[in-house]
Image 1 (cartoon, rainbow, N blue to C red):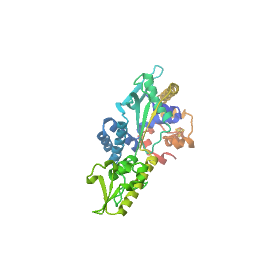
Image 2: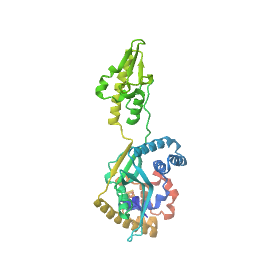
Image 3: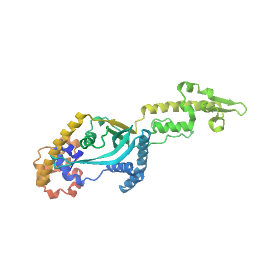
Image 4: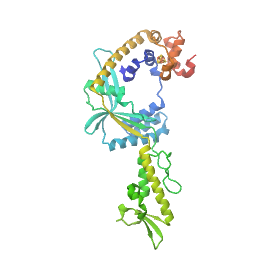
Length: 366
Ligand code: SF4
């Protein structure tokens, strides 16, 4: 069975591909992987199923984070009229020339602007989408649909949701909204709160805003100042006015509104996005060159699998000529096993079980 990850490994270090073939089954899922699974479960079956998954993994402390991220993507899809047609679509492609199948999962098939798209739901500590136009995993999904003739998608909607909570704006003891740049509140959330607290004044144009004082009126009898909102001049009951007991307080209030308004603009320009969706396509040439690469690597995987099944892991590794070096050590998940097996020629296949893998860390390197 060839997956996107396994064929990618076959295009790199063969020793790593063999080590992955043997040790992959012992790998325990990491916390980010489990959180990702819970997020996908929530997308497929609803938020309560995602929360159940978190409980199962002992990650209940991530519940609020999951709820926030789920709400964010649902809002995005609703606002943009993206409709999910099918979740977790599996492809399993057989070839005449290979024993291996090519298998994979697409997160969803969706409809957007009257066309069919594939969707990828990603979670990330920080959002980066520069790689999306050349991401081969995305190409593999579009190639699979093209090869089988299924869905005929226009492209892939790659949606990245930042692993961060949407914080509420800070309200100061004075009752005003804070304009601290470090409060971690989103533009939308802050703007909503500013409108709720200050009313339509917050959305007035620069020009109107400069002359805001003209909306402050002194009620001579009560010596109470009012700021009336021009949009609601025809409505006269109290809740449409802000009352102040002195001109000084009106000044302070207006200064605060000016700051809040400037902060809203700053947030709009500077907030790092919590959610990004990229629509990406592949040309016929890109699909063809993916197919060439796929077929070459499936052939390589078949030959490695044959060697592994026939000779066992130790012998297969001994006949795979590559040497660990600093560059591959920076990124290889199997560097410790690789080095250990190079240094210990007397190790038998039977020794390379779960307990060997579990020793982990520096212990495995003499
Ligand atoms: S450490 Fe380097 S040589 Fe060894 S398996 Fe990993 S990539 Fe290959």
